Amino acid sequence: MAVRLRLTRVGKKKQPSYRIVAADSRSPRDGRYLEIVGTYDPRREPSAITVDNDLAVKWLSNGAQPSERVRKLLEISGAWGGLRDLQGG
Image (cartoon, rainbow, N blue to C red; front, side):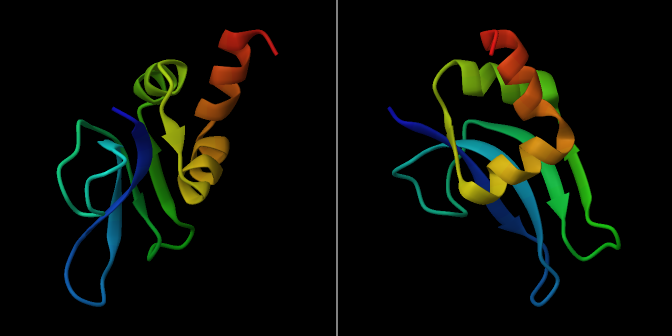
């Protein structure tokens, strides 16, 4: 099973907020997921990002591939740097 870290949309119409989830790459965008890693609210100023860095590093070290947007959010939150420190590079 190929696991991806990606965004799942939640919230009302015209008021998006997102969860960062670990999901099977074959499941639909808002479909089934394995675990919630964090949240992202782009409507706030500045955007609100909460990520459980330990969970994100765990999934990334186990081979999960982040989407482009999630990778950028992980860089902002510091989880991407934690993975690099873990790998020694």
